[in-house]
Image (cartoon, rainbow, N blue to C red; front, side):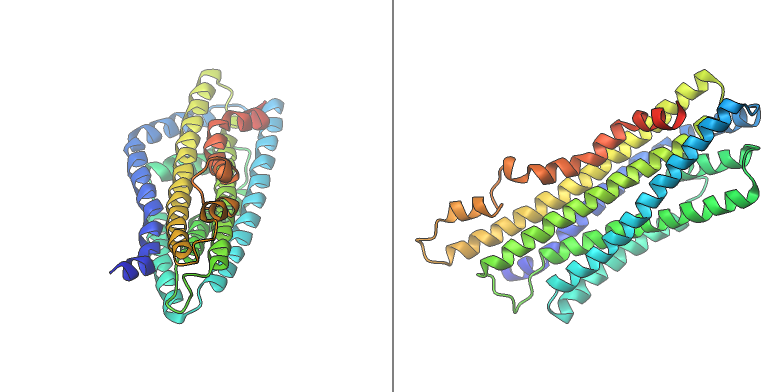
Length: 325
């Protein structure tokens, strides 16, 4: 029984961040009525706002910021997918092992894509993050239909990659803690490599989720440049900041839950491997030297990286200053 659990614990660890994401999604969906109300207020104000030279300049700055964050996100997503495939290939030595991990990834990505496809006006996430900005561009007289079509293509590409890439990284991290029957559990170099891969996966996940928050903030703040009403600007700024903070905290929780549980599992396996070796081996020193100890100092880089989405979400006002002022 213990052997079976050790062989398949990566499934439970992989489902932990999925559970946290589902919980955050359902919590966020309770804001549907307010998201529709704020969107209607903003669209009504945009249709009544006259174009001014100051508006043109601010809108162009916000547009360029969004385009820059889009480029950054797309490149990061593609590199992360490539890295994930590489790690999956290195860590999975048997056909049965890789089939189980890929099956787990397919289930998660199918659910994610179904959520994306069926998102509509009855979804708070759809209204708050996608629909408000896109409908604001449509309501303004500054944008041609051709330009709106190009924006639609880019934002849907980013949404697709944003849904797909975290699953690739999750599958790659699961592969780092999956152990095939033919792999030697007493091989300490094996666990060192797996811990390094886990840290790489945490870094990759932190970077793409950080870029995701940056892109989301720049996308949501774009229509704010189409308003001249100071009071409504303050309302919309608070709205953007709250949404960015919520998803920044959620992304950080996803990363921490995955890294801590996976690192704890690897540490437990390493301790079992050390116990099977000659007693003269300085076990604690080996654990400390190779990053398997429960120590803040030994994991400070990973913890710092995992906090970046939450920090970026809290600093969304910085992007507002860059794009609007």
